[in-house]
Image (cartoon, rainbow, N blue to C red; front, side, top):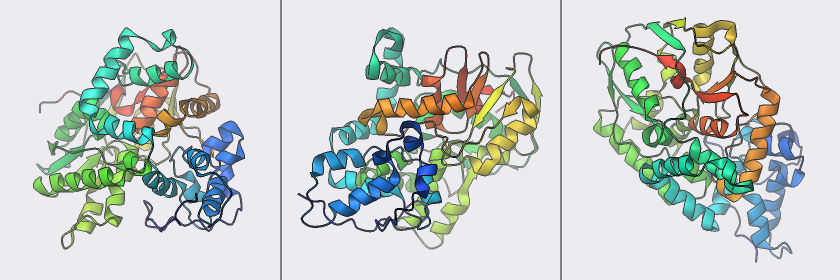
Length: 400
C-alpha cells in the first residue's frame, strides 16, 4: 500500500510543505539528528526522497516501516532555513502522522491535554523512583520526568536592581506555556513580578498549549481546538500584548497568523503585533551579580530562536563575560517532542552531542529561553553541572 499523495500544507513561515527536494544535501550540515548519528536515512533529504517514492503509485516500499522512519525527526526546523527551496520536514511529517496515527500520537495527545494532572504526578514519581534505578530507555524517561519537578530549579544569582517603568498601567497577557503552567510555576511568578515592576498590569488568561508540538505530532484537530481556545482567551482579555518567555511557544503562537482561525477584521495583524518577548521588555534593566553566581554560564540558543536574541542580550548586559554563547551549525538540545516516546535513545544521543560541544565544567550552568530545551538539559547534564531557564536565576523584589 502506498501513501496518498502529500497535499500542500502551510509551514510556520507560510511556505508550502512540498516534496520537490533537489537532493542538494544542504540540510545535512544543519540537521542535529544526522550530525549526532551520521545516519543519512535520518536526514531531511532522505525523508523527502522517501515521501516522494511513497506518494507514487505501485511503490515497492512497505508503508509501515517507511512511515516509522519518517517519524524520526526532532521538529527543530533547521532544515527549512537551510533548504534553497524552503522545504519544511516537520510540517511534512505532521501530515504523514495525521494520516497514519500510532500509539505515540495517542499518548502524546493525552500527555499534553492532561498536563495539569499528569505532569505533577510524573515529577512526584521521579522522586520515588529516580532515573539511576532504571536501565536504558526507561531511565532516560524517568530523567525527563525529574526535570519537571518544581524543586529541580537553579538558585537565583542575578538580582534585578531596577527596571524601566514602561508599562503605565497597560494590561498585558502572559502566555506561560505548558511547563510554566503545570510544572515550573515559579517562572510564571517571576514573570508577573517583573512585568508589575515595569508598570504593567499582568493577566494570566486561561490559555491552553500553544499547539505547536501537537501539530508536528499530526494531531491537527487537537492543535486547531487549542489555537481557537487561545484566540478566544486573548479576545476576552481585550486583545492585549501577549508576553512569552518560551521560544517554542513564541514560534507556535506566531504561526496562528497564517492559519484559518475565524479571524475578525484586522485581528490577524493585531495578533501578530501582540507577540512580545519578556526579555525585550526588560531592556534597560539594571542587575547585580550575587556572591553565589557560578564562574561559567553557557547560554543555549533554542532552535526556534528566543526573543529575537533578546534573552542573550539581557543576560550579557546583566552578567557580562560570565555568560558564554557557543554557536554551532547543528546545535540542538534534542528534545524533539513526540520523539521522546518514539525514539528516546535518539533524543538522548543528540543531547549528548550538544553537551559534548558545550563541554560544561563542574560548577557551571547552562541556561536557555525555551521550556523544552530547559527540560532536556535538566535531564541530561553531567554531574556537577546545573541547567535551567533564565527566569530561575533572576531575583526581584517588588510589591504587586
